[in-house]
Structures are given as structure tokens and as C-alpha cells.
Length: 348
Image (cartoon, rainbow, N blue to C red; front, side, top):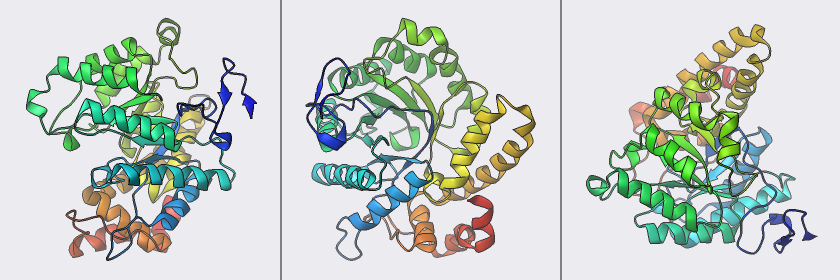
């Protein structure tokens, strides 16, 4: 493709829109709804089911839901380095072939050590990821004080070839819960950080972070290393998308996006529209209530429940890799309500 017009850097990877170190120059990180894509496995062998994975990524892209690969929902802890790269490559190929060449890919690269996390960031970039999301390991949670956590994210951000999103999920990191001061401090000091996902459910924290990073002056005083990667504040649950709009947050990364992509994308769009047209607020509130109830149902059964629903809705999904168990029989009736025609109509 030759020069892409950005700092005279030559694009060496064709449709991937990436330069030699894998960093995307064309796929901007934008406000909206992102879904942590499940990793699907072949029954009996537990090999990757790439056909179902590719179909699902494209299905969501058609609903304006962008993919996060190898995250918590994607069972990253159950994947090898090679499998992570394969999933990124498969998603990029599927998106490009379906005409979604501008849809960015976020890849999970958090793991035990700083060294391996950085290694995974490089591998993700080489495979075609545009951004990475990093969670601190909870294995030594008791020893990771705020200073150690700040050093971890600073080191990763400085050495990652692509912009990094901070992932705050206490339940998946041994109870580590980054506070707003630490997150805003990192945002100010690390120009290669491009956002935070808050799966702590702390709306007050989200509000405080937005009060700093969503101010117009922030981008001027603390410019990003990649101008296509502004610092976004993203919720980790679908039940406060509308309220977060009013404190200048930027959307959410949510498991519900996998099973109700149109409803969740519509809620974000409608929430944004209410800022200009308050008459839309009652409809946005109604839809937020529906989505919140759906999100609560999904949250109770997590990965296994989401896969069960996808199997019911679309014919693929399967079960998690062991030792993670499949959904319990008694929970199927509750979660299965999503797959009933009436419920599906209300949520899509």
C-alpha cells in the first residue's frame, strides 16, 4: 500500500493496516459497545472451533459490536500463546473478508509476569490486533501494592507496540481493585494507555475517572502516543450504559453483547442521542431496564451460561474448557428464557 499518510510510515501488512511492529495506523478506538468474544471448542477434543468463532465475530460486527479476543469471557487463561495468535488472525481475516476492514481488534494479554505480558502484547500486534487489554494477575495479589501495580501497568504500556487498555476486574485478579487515583495517574503519565474497563461495577469510580480524562483539556495536556487511541472509560456491565453517558463515559465491554448485540448497540446509540434530544430519554430508560435485567441473568452463569444461550440462539457455543464446568441443569431454565421467541424480540 505504500505510505498511509501518517508520519510517512510504510504499511507492510496490506489489509491489516499495520506497520512493521504491528501497531494499527488506521483502525481508531471509538466509543461504543465491545463484546468479549467466547473461545469456542470442538466437543471431545477441546480444539478451537474456528468456524464458529469467525461466524460469531462477523455476526456481531454486523450489529456494530466490536470484538475483544482472549479476555475473561474468551477463557484466555485456558489458551496457549499459539491459540491466542490463531484467534486474532482468524478474527482479522473474517472481518476483512466480510468488509469490516475498519473494525479494530482488542486482544487480552494479561498474564502472570510483566515479562510474559509484554511478550503477549508483541505477539498480539504481530497477529493483527490493534489494541490490547491487560489485567494484573491475582496470584500474588497480597504483595501487589499500589506502587507495584503502577509499575506493572507503566512497564507494559511503555513496551507494548500497540496501545493498552487497563482492565480492572477484582473477581478475576485475586481481589485487586485499582482505585480512581491510580487509574487517572496512569492515564496522565502513560501516553500508550488508551482506556480502562471497569468490571468492578463501581459507578462512582467511573464518574471520577471521567471527570479527569473526558475533559477537553486532558487530550491537550496529555496527548496519546497513537492519535487514533484516545483514553476511553468503558463499563464492564450493561446495566449502567445510560447513566454513564451523562458523566461522559464512552460505552462498555460486555458479555451481553454476544447474545443481544442489537439491543446493546441500540442502547448506546440511544443514550448518546438523548444528550441532544431529551425527548428520547424515556425510551432509553425503558431499553436500559430491559438490558439491565438481561445482564443480571447472564452474570449469574457467566461463560457457561453465555455459551449455552449462543447454542440455543445460533447453533454454536458449546461448553467451556475443563476444568470450568458447563451450566448447571437448574440454571438452564432461567437463562433459557433468552432463547424464547418473545424474549428474543424484546432484546434484539
